Amino acid sequence: MAVWVVLLVLAAGSPANAQSTTRLLLSTGWGIPDHHGFVFGPFSNLTMNASRQIAFLSPMRGAKRDLQAVIRSSGVTFDVVAFEGLRSPVPKATYESFSAPSMNNAGALAFTATLRDDVPASAVIRWEGGNSLAIASSGGAVPGAPD
Image (cartoon, rainbow, N blue to C red):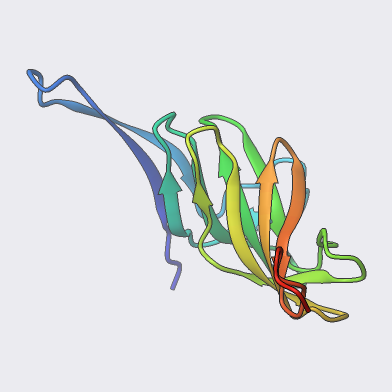
């Protein structure tokens, strides 16, 4: 049995005009730009900012395996921000899983990631303009606190 999940964006009209417009943005099974051989799986943990940019979690489904991913969209373009097995900004560690992303009005994302391959085991990641930065990681020093 196939289950299709569709991601729609609603844009409300003015308060005097209670109409809204709905636009199909994405559907499961659609190909992922720049990731040949992968399609979007079910979407979860959607967030949207005041600029109507969205971010969400989705598996990237391939012929051999599915990879969990954090995806960002500014309307018609998509950025695969992070995916399972991708090298993280923490040295010697790759991504394993992700929390729901949050996004500010400038489009910067923040999420937590479980890491594998080396300690630390988790990190808080900030993604902005195509660059990822580990803000904090488990086992790391607390800024401003001695030892």
